[in-house]
Length: 304
Length: 304
Image (cartoon, rainbow over all chains, first blue to last red; front, top):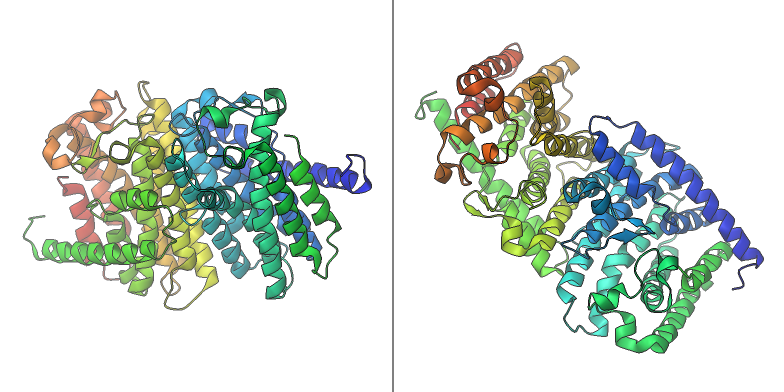
């Protein structure tokens, strides 16, 4: 995809729009909370508003719009997902975990606020994710949809998803694991939350046939993995400034990566395969998938 | 209250019953989760089943039964609260927080499993708390009740409750704070979750007049504080073996406590006052409050 193609420009506009809306609405929601614990709120905001690319909200928004969901409702789901994402980054960066000092070119949360506050900021952001889907106004108040959204977010985050992936990742660091195990690990650690975005878009849409949801889930699982493969490739070929964190940090930590398993060229081929499989999964869907295709291209060709 | 009075014996029976049921149902629910991350699940179970007194489920169960709620539904709420409670203890014990090596006479989670797994076990237990109220079967499936329960749990746990209290506590450690600030801190840190138990009992009951709920909330706020005052007293007068953690650990950490503010006798008078106010709050309720009164007496006279 050339960076000046019409679909690339349209996608940049979507990213800009999503980012602006999510930032504004999240700030509003956080400011409505009891402001007794200033330091905690400051630490939470620091990570939520640290210039993240809002990839997950983009995906959620694109899928939801394609399925004709209410855009404001989609933003509610996106806000929640971004709180989960921010919490996971804060905890992953802790000294006991990946011990990262930089994230997106800025000091990580525990470097800025100390470990105790960073742990608490992560904890409170997880809770906030649930408060958002449970409390934030929706276009039509609907308890059943709130329950469905919260279920999807919980399943993707906890012992059936992200936390399980992170736990397996920790145990695998420094040990050789198989490619199948590495794939499963990332399906849980990164893939689960991306899949959740697709599910949330579908939950908020008017009734969608189950076979369409299954195709979208298949798509999500492919791009979830593609996202991680591209991450591993970037860790090797990109410079630290572009990455916003030290280049080669995975190698330094003796982490299992797709590059360590498949080599650089092998990883690039694998990425290409996942890209094709993702596009194939959505090829037969009777919706306008142009934006979703453009997003897929963007995801695998991103440089940061 | 003599320890052999009929109400004390009835209360011990309730505690035994609640503990047995909650332990069994929680084990069942956890075992139904995807078991990919063995180490994580083991660490979660270690803290959830560490012989906790299940005070919060007792309160929830007593209030809910008094208001004629379905006992199995009450257990669902209790299971969720116990996951939040266990997660908060794991994170509070971390080296960056209170740095405790012992809890209930056993090594704390991070001593047993390492810091990274302890952080994740806490994270995943918070998620599990939401999974329980969102997914566990209820006597009548009711999305609105699930949303109400999850809202109460989220509000009590996050930046409007427990996390805020812990954050203020961390900042106050080593600094002099006023008695009013100390009280507010504990209303958030301990009181919010005890109040949540009362709210959850009321949510699961047939419709209860708002003024009764307000009286129960007032009661909860008094016993929440009384619970903490008694904790501070026990930290000074009890021995380490009874406490299951080093006696005097609050003093060692240079923590603000009710004893450091009011002295031992002053704290005992304050406890007596809160005890009376709690009983007064429920005096006019048109329900059978015998068990709730016995629970209140037990709470302020407990020795561990």
